[in-house]
Length: 259
Length: 274
Image (cartoon, rainbow over all chains, first blue to last red; front, side, top):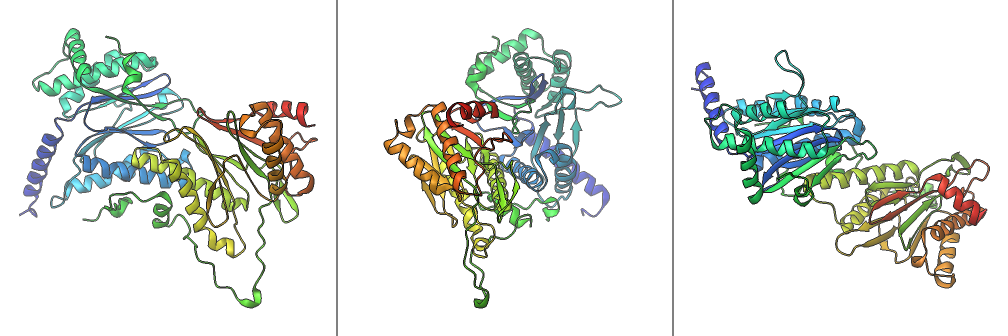
């Protein structure tokens, strides 16, 4: 049955629909570059969504915890063995995602008798200058979106991850108009939080086509901050220490979140 | 379904491999040579431990001070006079090494990467006891080489325990991997007998015990001890007065590791030692 090409395409389409449905409720993650590094931010209570992969690489993920864990371990293993046998400077996010993760996820997705990875991941690698920062979003089917310039769009100093494409699109639209690459840490925290709110509102109201009005964003953000904890991490640009990843406690951020 | 093409082999034991076994599985690290090799009786040689250096560490009021001279030797030849034997393993841990440099540096590198790998995979810092055990295991894995007469390493491990009991902790090891927690001081290397004598004397009958010393007093004691070791041990450089090469001195405290700048060591040396 599956040997017929049409059936295969149909099976893949069903599988895509199923995975999209599973990922849809995932709480958004915003990652923004700022003067001193890259900030990852999300809100939630249940489980950790931001992870350290290597000295200059961080990951945020939504999806099934078991699949996230397998992919996270694979990424850490690959980066660690490369970093040990050569040097930390030879560990590259681009290679990790394009060469190692994407092909494996693609074949898991397309081999329809086997289980696909129910996960969507956002990686960032901090560079020496803001224009060297790399953001990659790796989809469950191995598709990769980067922050690089394309014919249709200028380079972005941010990247987002969310349950639906619509939510991703509006978060990106928001950050495109609000976020400046040389922002201070405080500004970055607040725009990341606003972008999260936009993404979260769109997830709850699937018909949304346009950015919600400013006061609605502010109100949603206030409501969510009252009930959920902030999970955040930074990759510091400062090269004096080899390990740039630092997770931030909710307490550290509350004081700089403007009310 | 085979997912191993990109190194995606997963073990489902619940616990992740530690880094050395992961590296061995991928063929990136030599096998653990635990048992001594059978030796031909006619070639039986006397095992000569060669740990040509002097490393010392002691607790003082500001944490743990770890100091090491800079000389690297091969037999009775000086091969390098700017060797760094006091190595940072993570933000709060130092491994200071006496022994064969190739093995010692590799061991420090494996340990450093292991602790990072653990933190990243397990999402928490390794406990101090875990770190101490990890180094012990590396020494034990290396013991086969030690028995063949190559690659003996006798390190000191200094760290700050921020968790169970917030305080500086100091450990020394033997070549087989047994670990001992030092209450006040530890020394290793060929120049260590002299240093151990000095530290014992100072701690017991000196103006004040080691743990009450301030940083200036601690640094000057470390420099005097290394200079004394160098007086009788050819493998220890002490302070090179003409080349102005000073020992490496690092301090571990709650705030992390502080590497003393050469200018500061030079100032203490001129005032208190020379």
